[in-house]
Image 1 (cartoon, rainbow, N blue to C red):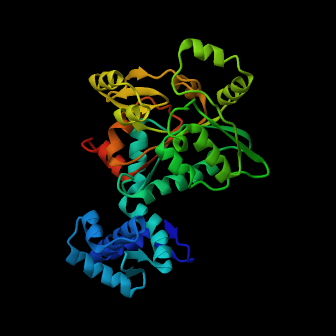
Image 2: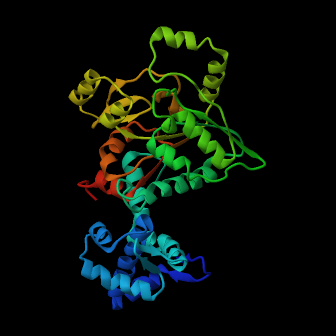
Image 3: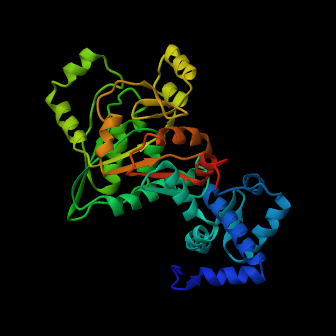
Length: 356
């Protein structure tokens, strides 16, 4: 199997394995230098000490490698730290797919998808807890998945809010074509959260970035039964709710239970209740314990968990080692057609300790 690089060359994985057999240090050096380029790309500009800590190597060892990369004109240094040159960025991106093939990212993706019983898992290197570039990559991966999966015709894409979703939205690109038109709608009501992470704001940014259209749903985060019934009489709200109910695609994230409860300004009594019930995850206004059981639900207008079972295109975006428990818990409820976009840190933490 050959691997095409953007410069038109072709690297044979089998040939690299043969070279490794006679000179094992070749692939080790490539892998080590790729990791250095990768971490500089994520953190640039970055100082040597911070980079060494992140890579778990000594500054002395790192200096030897960065000096070599500098001589190759792949990185440059300044008072603010190291960053990739344009040549360095080109080499870094060319090496990415090759590294995945050589060191098993595709196997990790299949293993995680099989474990959760879902259609697909896409894993990017890194840890989004520590590297902002990883969250940007979530956006690029989501765009690629949407571009491949969302069908020709009229689509309604329901979007959840949240910090991850807000960052992902900023990194989407054009999806609109002459024969594919996308309407973005908030999956649920959410006034009461910070404006930039509300589903209304996220769906608007996604529409702008992809050149689609959007509709907003202006309803509070939590509602009494009486308020809910009265809002359903409003024609403008009813119109958007009808659009949401017809969605053929959903994009959502997965949050840590207590963090999400605090962000939503839930009461101390409710926070204590969630802790007592060992809640670790939240998505769609539902809170889950480590076994994936629903332990609490916020009554909100919009998509409910049961509603997504028959939606053909579902994309869950969440990563970071700190979210591993949350992802694990929610994914026990995920419909089989779900695509999970996550990072290596979360994937490894989820699969840690499982038999191979």
